[in-house]
Length: 99
Image (cartoon, rainbow, N blue to C red):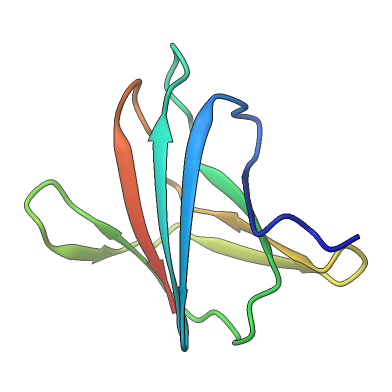
């Protein structure tokens, strides 16, 4: 079986959205859990490119680098574990670009 394209780790009530474009992925996550998601962590199917940076859209509409981002590839499962360093409050939305 192929891995799921996008899973929010440890947050079963988070709603993820993935848009694949050449050389980048656009990721949206809505937190529908009653608690905040601490250090939003995503598991992605291995992208066709080597990820170099992760950016988050701020409330002011500007892209900011996620300085605490981490990428951990897992060849056995064909996935990448992506830690963002972002805390996502209840009913909040995170919009990210991985390129």
